[in-house]
Image (tube, rainbow, N blue to C red; front, side):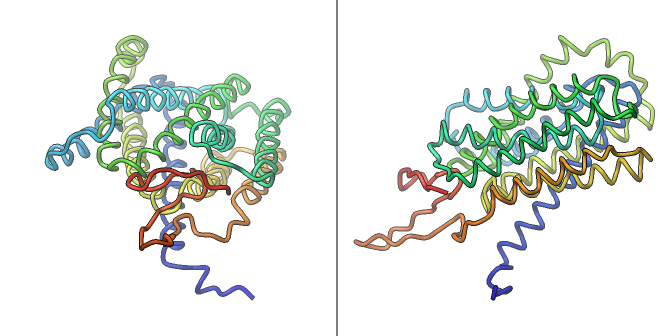
Length: 338
């Protein structure tokens, strides 16, 4: 019989709470982006720009106060910011072509991407069970695409297939940034990561806005109907970016991905109750497939993600991440089979 007290530890409860918090934040950004797209506002880079500025100001100020040198090379942060900005650009752009529910579900493509990238670059070893879970997730994603073709109601988007492809491309870039960020927050100061991501993200976004979105910004009538979703998007993104590194440090990317999966449920509820739209029956099958796949992927591990090992010759402590195979940088590196 399962001991509930041992299972529902303080760490587990905090992880669950933070996970649902970031899930609601992601749903909020989706809702805001969908509202802006409905109002004809086509400026995806401009939407994310405010978030990067906030990150640079808040965490940059803390970093300046700390008076610490960079713990890793600046161009790593430049690449991280580039992938992150373009991932946000593609996903936000997709709201102009496909439905809110499709974007939220197809975002799950990040999961197999993270598995692939951690296997290639972080040398993580995965059991067959993990790949079975991924197969279920991918099957669910395929059903989403077929659902957009099958559905007779096109209120959710003008070109659903184009929107679906944009989301998949953006989710692939998210996979790169998630893998890189997990490695960095576990080996580098979290404040430094957020500050540099904000700085380079703001610079890249400003350049992209000047090239691609000048006409769109001039055409926008900044009424309350446009300012509210724009401000809500920026605030939700800032809180999301600030919370995710904490969750990664506590529980790793498995808990993060599992938590973000519930954003699909919130998205469906928004579509039904806020937009009064009908949801095609394939969405529910797709959602069930993704849920089953992620349960298979994340289940079965009895060890905590952070284990303490006592060396035979002394009391050396090594912090090991089961999923990413990352150890405390002061003790070298190891690959852990999960």
